[in-house]
Structure formats: structure tokens, C-alpha cells
Image (cartoon, rainbow, N blue to C red; front, top):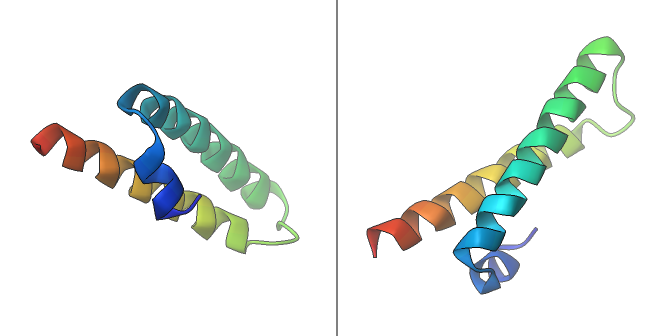
Length: 63
């Protein structure tokens, strides 16, 4: 998810997306621990998307 897409979402939508991405990240980590993923970059991508969403939420709280 790109930063421009994240900025367009409301706070409620961001919180919902954050929960979805955290769940998918946990699933990816578990699958990667059991057997190597075909594309391990997915793990890094999910982690960075979670950070982007969390940063946007924090930024909006401080405004």
C-alpha cells in the first residue's frame, strides 16, 4: 500500500487496515518459519506497510 493511498483513508479505515495487515504479517511469518516462502520479500513489504499505517495514525493523533 502506497503512502498516497494511506493518506486518503479515514482513521477508522486505517485502524481496520492495520488489523488486517498485522494478521497477514503474522500468517506470513508463521508460514515462512515452517517452510521458506517463494517470495520472502512479502514479509518485509507487510512490515513496512504496517509501519506506514501506524505512522499515519500517530501523525493524525498529534494534530
